[in-house]
Length: 264
Image 1 (cartoon, rainbow, N blue to C red):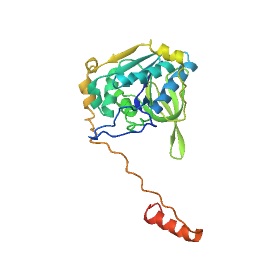
Image 2: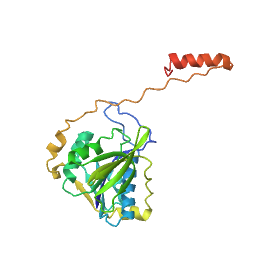
Image 3: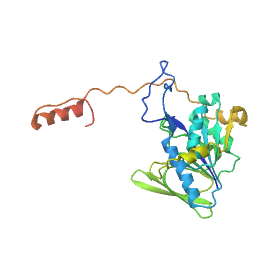
Image 4: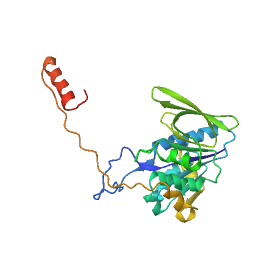
């Protein structure tokens, strides 16, 4: 069984984000970049599958991004992935998520992966389009937001469990397939220092736009979505403190919740 894990580098959720003056992007100067937390679950799931099964041949990590995104791949390699693919080209920065899925599909279509894993969403754009779109491009089944997965002994199918409103849904899926992972399935282990050093020696295949056959066709189907501008969320209005006894404050509170907050 060959497993592919898709990894994205995103700003740390604790970082103070600032918008560039022209509103075209965030100011990335001094911003700490990390592996997308949902993709960490996908990496760990792949490694645990190999620890449990003798038929997992290779685990490959793949990312699309600038040279700095290699740090995300090194983390995946240190945790247990065997090799990596880095799709690195200035032109890739202009692709939207559906086009990125087309790009990845063009690269991996003939590489024979039995299982493709991705976090259910990215914490920067938060759309979660890449996994489902990749399944569509490759003609593979996709199951999203998994909280449990069991692969059959013959590696021909799997049983996946995901949460839906008010219940859990259990699906039987033939392999190969694309799975996107929800929080709670696993927690990624910390890479040890020796493994971080070993990760530097593991092979990373770097591909530019010229190395991808059929790139124009693969990235044109979605049409392209452009981000017109970014803006910070509006500042929260100051809170109100109601003074007086309960008989006085409760009617005031109810009126404010109904007329100003409009939650009643």
